[in-house]
Image (tube, rainbow, N blue to C red; front, top):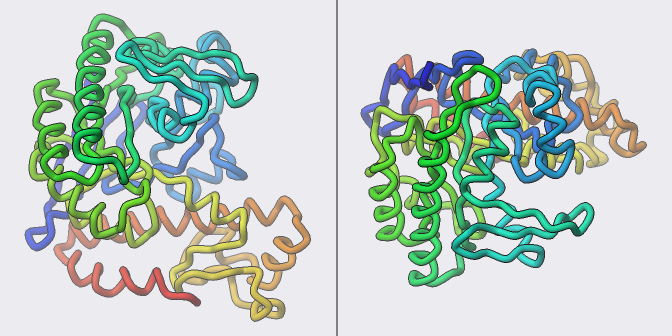
Length: 377
């Protein structure tokens, strides 16, 4: 069945939305954060743990999965769902971020992007069509088009040029997707990506041009790449003024809990970011009491739970002193506990916002929690 989005409630004061995203692998309650499983694994967390934390949808990366284990392996083993033993929905990024982040290893033309593998140095060519084919092999429920992302510092002319190419590539991707069938018997939606750097007029042009594709959902890309947070929020507002109310909106690669709250207030439904697990690996925790540097000596003899405000096993069972000890001793268990805490906090934040939207109290919840989650505990 086609992917469908059921809008349940909208906050009249802010535009925050609560909805249900129906996929062949299950329903996703929005707003929702997607833990990042770049190569088919959310670092240090097993799929069962992710389910226990409340994960409903994961993100994988087409570029990295195409390098290893490779499309042939995924196709032979029945796609990413079976490969990683995850039976819920999966969204895959297209590799467009690597066009941006691997600038020294790629060449961009109208045909597509030629990469030098960061693993072997071998050449790898991505076009709008081959990116769709790769995601067919992966078997994700939501595929993304190949796009050309630019840094926030580009001028308007460069932003407009890159966006025009992104729109052309999206047209090619949709034509190819509609001419091909999924391998594994479930529907795969394709989302185009709004670009335009920090220029409101280019963002509007991008969103308006992509409406012609009549996509099942739309993504907002090219943000959280160097611009100030207020600029990000302005670009999201501009974009969501154009995107249809009846389709889900996915803001790519964002961000802190405060970023999530402010962008939900502007009508975003889906998010992903590596920050929860990346910060966990350095001992930086997101908690309901604020930000915690678990390496700080103040926690050396603390019997406090990692986060008594969360119900999860990892948050309630272990003390801050124990987690600090594991972190300083570089014991692998510290990564599991810290990652479960951070991912759990992000998922908790989304659940709390969703409940507040449905119950008509989102503005008050936002006022209470936006600052609290950013404080240093």
